[in-house]
Amino acid sequence: MSLSYNSMTATDLMTSKKPESGLRLRVLGKIGEQKPYNCYQCIKCTSGCPSMKMLELKPHEVVALTRAGFIEELISSGIIWACATCLKCKERCPQAVAPVDLIIALRNLAVEKEVKVPESFLQNVSMILECGFVSRPQATVTRKLEKTDRDKLGLPGFREPDEKFKAAFMKALEASQEAGEQH
Amino acid sequence: MKVMVYWGCVVPTIQYAYEMSVRGVMPQLNVELVELENPSCCGTPVQSVNILAALYLAARNLAVAEKKGLNDLLVVCNGCHLSFSEAMYFMNQNEKLRERVNALLKEEDLHYSGSVKMWHTVDFLHDMVGEEAIKNAVKKPLNGLKLASHYGCHILRPSTLRTIDDPENPRKLDELVEWLGAKSVPYPEKLDCCGAMLLLSHPDAAFTFSGLKMKAVQDWGTDALVVSCPSCQNMFDMRQRSAAATTGAKLNLPVLYYTQLLGLAMGIPQEKLGLNLNRSPLDELLQKLSDLLAPN
Image (cartoon, rainbow over all chains, first blue to last red; front, side):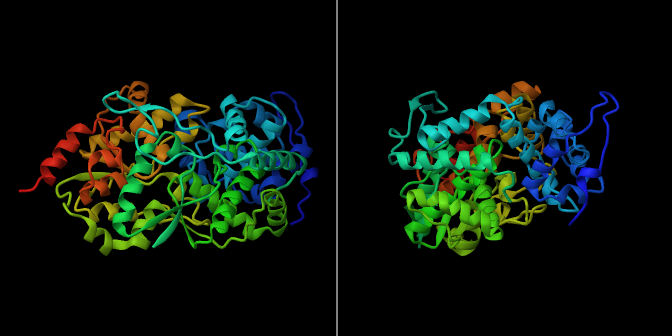
């Protein structure tokens, strides 16, 4: 497909800002370049979005803003973290645009650019680097508030992956920083 | 039959009841669970940070399973199931990506070729074990119970990947419930999301998702909510009080895993199914069940 994305321009009338086409191409590259251009704004995604009811996430707007090139505005607005990844938009889109994939790509870019990323998402990564999982086995309590844990419940021992895993995972994290597009 | 099992992060580190009940019911269905040698996180928790690293983690675990050499892999968690489905899809579709990921996997002497057949607890019990074996294993049918089933988003959508049932009108968990003699009630909120994936960024919204769904299920007059995903169980069971506090609803809804329910119908002792670990108000339901299950 050979749409001339770069020649399309728009201006934010509130701030008089021009969109940045470089960032737009990077986000589009992450999800298959032409996908958002297939959107005809039928709003089926937004009408079924549970985060629309609760947090005013409008997936069709995310698609439209990406097309127009307002990537920096999107990743710094925080709205991309309102998605519950229920995947209904991806299932129901008549044009196979998958707004959720676009939102995940925007989150990745927000991490890369170090803007407004909820702390816990990054903690998950460091925990996996530390022990291979997002958590180690935790102590818990029964409904009657008796303390218990994996051992006491008679479950088999929990093994963490070895040092080799950590090195390989680190490499995977670094490799994707270099590459603009993935799939 | 021998089946490899992948537990993920949440099940073996806090949702012990799921692991206990799966370990409890499978031998009675002639299923032998085979542990993986060196599993790690499935990738889902990394997806928002770095999608390639998430794909690598998913492919890594599938490669670990391939190395073990059996055909079938049981994945008990919905999030892990989706992560693996995505990896299978992209690795299959994009040769360049497959080469890049395999180059990373080589560090650990692993290789992804895509030969493993993946199952989730629900479709494994429904399609692989099947109606006859499950009905035969039921010693005391749960007649008279009215239950609501909750599938969880990530095993149903998107249907372009390897999902387990119809994305808009799933039936398998409902049928599994009915094979135990209970009634699975239809309810309009069935496909509503539990909100678990919002816990990290918007906890109040997350608890509103789960609270509103539980309120609805309760108002339909059901005896319990049946789930098959550890993250949904966390939202509905372990954190039911937070959901009640956030939405202002009076919640008093028993929530349990399908495998716990199956174990009860098979006559497995409650403590072996981790039924003392559910935080939701299960005691009344268990009392009702023990009257139901008591020898005449």
